Image 1 (cartoon, helix red, strand yellow):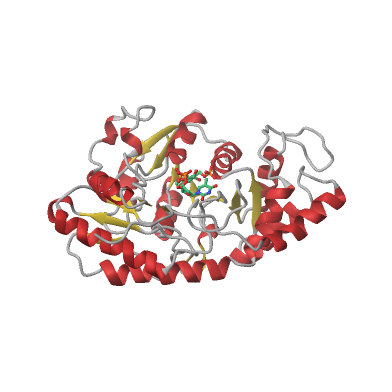
Image 2 (cartoon, rainbow, N blue to C red):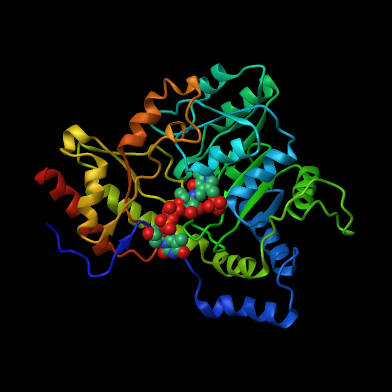
Length: 374
Ligand code: T4K
């Protein structure tokens, strides 16, 4: 077995700009005393992210979860929302939290994203929206989803939590759907510590999202709409502005490591990679599927074995959302064949921009030997 690491290797590490660059933004906060309430740094971040992504409007918020809450509220949704069971819990529990009903349909066996045919078959007269996830940043079939939504008069909210700097059909993934919601959490490719954003091409909808994140106040501080507190702080925005300058480089170095994993593990018959166009992916995660029969043990056992070497991969996203206690029970949860198979086999290997090539090689060696020992 390959040598055990002295220091733990986690599934990810935050990508952070040099501290001196963040300090320049902190100095501005200290000088102005403006900490929050849609201050100048947050407004600058909205402009810079919109330009970076090439989208009409970016509405920065406190986290990716409340981005989706705001989207559901701003579109006045009440009823059934069709979504994927293969995602992080926030995708579906937020639908329920907003008093709508999540309806789970199966995913595509290769891209692991929601299957548009299944979406169309699940539509009833109660359906109000589709909430697909670009899981691990691989784009959903955005064109077919748009056709289905148009045909049935449904809204589309994309959970694009993983998908900063991803394009599909030549334009930002954030420009698809009525609203796309992303996360700027510490573990994401682009982070503001905690944070997130709603993206939309609809200026009126953007204005509503801005009011709703700020208690329902308009620009003159009059209460004109429903609202909550979902504002991004100036400190978070400053970190975002510092990190944004390094985003292309972060993506590039992660891609190199992803490709090294691919090269070292690609020949093994028990490992499958997610299917995507290499130019339409951001390499924020390193998910593989492990075939337990061929490998000799399941992903739970692999996880334990790697932990014995101080390497902490993760089983994102197991179990299926439809199998979690708060969300179980919808009979339409049956027939999630591909999603269940993927969730049982998925394992995310460590991937972050400072992970060394040596570490990638050692981790791959551990996997190969683990399979041999099983
Ligand atoms: N939709 C989807 C599809 C999502 O995946 C998520 C969030 C959301 C919506 C909601 O967005 P947010 O409301 O969170 O903005 C993470 C994150 O909490 C969560 O943002 C993320 N998805 C989810 C997939 O995973 P964990 O369980 O990975 O956190 P944790 O603490 O185990 O961290 C993993 C590793 O990262 C650690 O072993 C070490 C490293 N780490 C972590 C943190 C928090 C650091 O080095 N520094 C840190 O500060 O949750």
